Length: 250
Image (cartoon, rainbow, N blue to C red; front, side, top):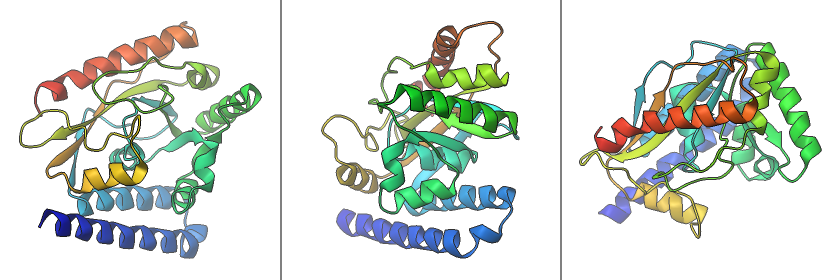
């Protein structure tokens, strides 16, 4: 029964992705940006529901921009979860653009792409981010640079935080966690680290019952004279604090 349940979830999710792709090609060119954002958020919420993942939002998501959301990174599922909690534009590695299906979905959501191996490209992306923030966008970054096991936080890379300093806009810490609804303990099912494959992580997620995706929004804060490294450390500390309640019990 567990196998058939997971296959049913997978099939429903694939159909939902197909509908999303059709919507992008058939309707997005005619939609205003606010309507696109609403469609993306509703699509993400529906995907989580189809896969049996309960969304729990704590704190206050931003009503609008400009703001830079700064979150920890656990899984391939993080982007869907954050879109479901509050639509935002992500900064992602450039190879995502070429992934089948995912690249199209990410592009439609307004993703900005970064070539990680190029220092010059990082500077270009920071400038582009600053321009988008000045125009009132809600951007999101994962300053750990890669996924962790969800139990600890990796060091934060501060480069992308510079965009909020340059644009003189606030950054808002966001803590992501996956929790077992029955026990309140952290769930490692959606993790995507080490030797995990994407297919293996997706299958483990679909075969695990009762996952809650907990998104905890902290209060927006400004640099207040701090350089990007000091501000990144302060944001990391705040995210660690936001994770503590869910680590004890949801």
